[in-house]
Image (tube, rainbow, N blue to C red):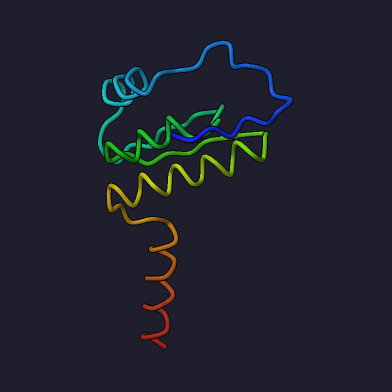
Length: 100
């Protein structure tokens, strides 16, 4: 997973390892559940949620971290071949056009 640290960022004092996140997501959620992380960072929790068939929502204050999280989560969606919100919106638009 790529980093989004800016030059003036402080070092993170408690980085989580993906293995720990994977165990937590698998232990405390089920397929299709929504995983919420109030500290999105580069998207590790949501990335893992998508990887295991969950949905994810995260909140991030730093723009650089948010953009990196989006890239990481899109990669998880591609790897998992999960239908994204954009896919659903396109399908809905196509259905509406056919029905009109």
